[in-house]
Amino acid sequence: MNQQRSTFLISVLCFGYAFLYIPIILVMVYSFNDSRIVSVWGGFSFRWYLALLDNRQIIEATLLSLRIAFISASFATVMGTLAALALTRMRRFRGRILFSGMIAAPLAMPEVITGLSLLLLFVSLQDLIGWPSERGASTIMIGHITFSMAYVAVIVQSRLMSMDNSLEEAAMDLGGTPFRVTIDITLPLIAPAMLSGWLLAFTLSLDDLVIASFVSGPGASTLPMWIYSKIRLGVTPDINALATIIILTVSIGVFIAGWIMLRGERQRLAENQLNVQIDS
Amino acid sequence: MLGHAKQCRADRVNTNLPQQRTLDILWRRFAILVPYLWLLIFFLAPFAIIFKISFANPIVALPPFTPLFEVAENKDISFYFTLDNYRFLLEDNLYWMSYLKSLKIAFVSTCLCLLIGYPMAYAIARASPGWRNIFLFLIILPFWTSFLLRVYAWMGMLSTYGLINNSLIAIGIIDQPLKLLYTDFAVYIGIVYSYLPFMILPLYAILEKLDFDLHEAAADLGARPFVIFRDITLPLSLPGIIAGSLLVFIPALGEFVIPSLLGGLDSLMIGRTLYDEFFGNRDWPLSAAVATILLLILILPMMLFQHYQARESQDPL
Image (cartoon, rainbow over all chains, first blue to last red; front, side, top):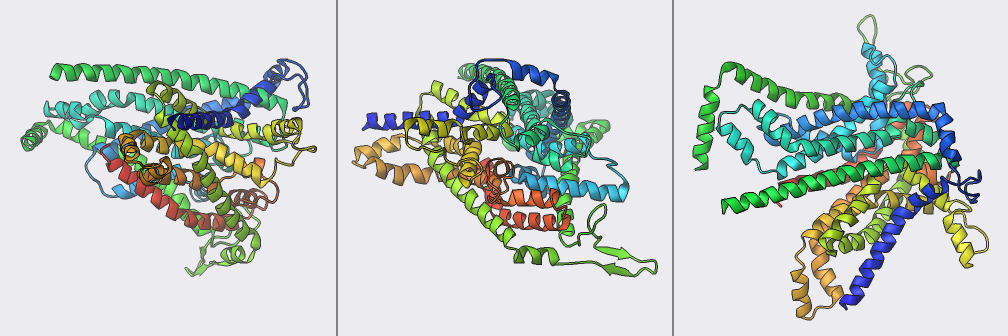
């Protein structure tokens, strides 16, 4: 009976991972296809990668997307961390329920609604106070900060809650002020969570199509917007090449970040074990 | 003992220098107010505006809607408040169908995700700790890579001469390629594929904590595997099932990218209808009304999710 069960579980895993990975692998394989017709294999070639380098539009859109992702991830990390600290380490304050609700809601909000509502806000603000005078990179950044700070807040918050706060309490007992304790003790402890939050915010911003389409102006076209306008009409070999580059870059990045964090985690576990041994 | 420690701390704080106290108060205000105000302005206020504009009339101008009231020179206020947008939504079948179809697609996709995700989460939870990390990493990895490009990958798989049709023809099951792309079937595949990690992760988090000794006890007492699953595993993993289902259902309901890339012209999900109404017809007040109703539909599942989240965070485990 046990044998039967493990065979079942192993085949479930094989099927599941095949489902998750075969489409991506196929895109990668076909990005090296020499043929212009996507479904016919015409030999191995790098021509679609070379074609990407000649495409000014792609390069400009990529640079714009990277700039937006970098700036919005950084702001989102600062604000998400502040929000997480406010919710876990500060005394109750008025409007706390509304605050925690607003932090969690963007996670579940459909993008079409977030995008539409932000655009209507920008249009109304422009009408009222003349800002923003035009929509583009800056309005996209505001949109991305707003939804990715929620992700950062959730990640940092769960770290703050699972963390043993005896160090912070000890520092307070020794006369540290809340501000100094936060800077000297809490921040270094939650730095790994802030880094994961930053990375997540960065990739979310890099990937967002819907919100950017709503709040962008005529001048600014991000990479997802450019990709979407091309793939609406079907599969093309140069997008296969672009997809391969993006997916490989992100995967390698995630792999390295995951490895560093796993190592940090192991180190912390080892230290904890050592502490326990010393205590006993 | 604890009370004493608290007393000591209070004494210390009181003896702090006045500048430090001001710094602390400023810091506290800063940490709360900056994200709070940001969310009030860029998250909450926009919903009020959507709600407001859903009662306006569309006009050909910039912005393309009428103000709700105007103050004339003699201080008379005239209101331009209309329920036409909502009336139109109720009367026009297109919108009804879109909402119903979205609900149906989101519901069926959630069930499919559960059917595929549950055994996977279970298998990962029962694997050895070393394998577990690798399996989990492989679940999380697609979540980090581009959503848009993962949907795009299925366009190639499902196209007329894509992998699926070619394989089916090669085995001899079909003679002519099936129309798979631009159908509801493709939309289901796309949603299940994109949101499967959201189902597996909360399920895994619960299943991993399960005490499998209970299973052995039940088996020793003669329970059959199915009975063990139905009476022990399933009830204990219910919180994970609820969380995972909501995490799939809520975003699937408002999904835009998947129906617009994989769905046919007739697979009108509400997210896509809203997008087309806004960018195609430029009818902002009507789009605002569509969004308001979608929000109303979403309120219940979102509150359920919030409730669940709040309970999770109180849970000391």
